[in-house]
Image (cartoon, rainbow, N blue to C red; front, side):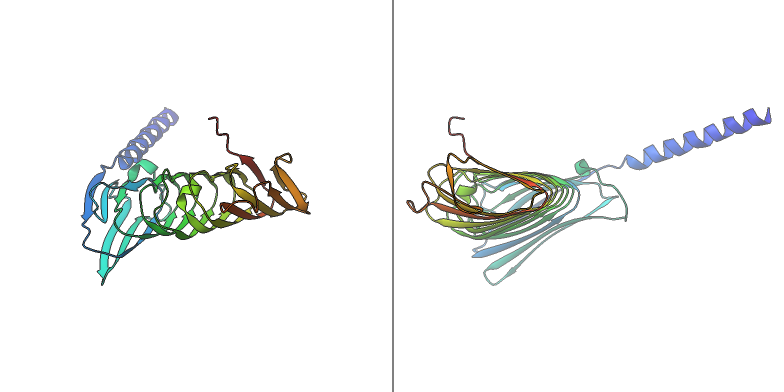
Length: 292
């Protein structure tokens, strides 16, 4: 009888613990709307530091520096949104962090919808952790783009040509899934890509009429590079016997060891020059299927 009583008592305690744990997770979310109006800024720097979350970034139709809608769990998440203007330059800071060490944030507990102005050139410095992100830079005046992506799933779009030249694009990716479409429309001079463990796609479709240089390092990940047929392409690659590199040998000539060129190289102003280093991962170079 005593043994049965103890078992019933322990079952009651465990049930109480389960109920308490369940109740502790049922926090209510808080929604905030923030707006910063355009007032003649000539430049804008955006510093974004977001841990676990859901991010949707694009262009607004109002011309405001930022229209933001953020929904988060105030018991677990601290959100900071600050904007300062110094002379004709705006500085925007967007930050979120867990309030308690070791807490596991659900992406749906921290949702950011961000729409930026198309009136002012923007320097983006984006650092995100375990996020699901959609970055649509179409229509924005981007001067420089730095992205550090942790364990994220991200889609990046340039659906129309950037109206001004981007000096640099720097992308550092951890254990992520990343697809970038329309890099030709980004209108960049220099692109640096460092991929760790994950599945990556860089699509260079779009409109541009100049030479662009691309430095790529791939650790243990898998990278697919999609290039247009009407562009002059040169590829210099460095790899090990543990890595994999695939290219259509009917479309590219190996000029010397590990140096490849297509027929258009040296015959057009539209040029992509790749310098590729592969560790234990794989890189595949393919022409874009224009029939799709």
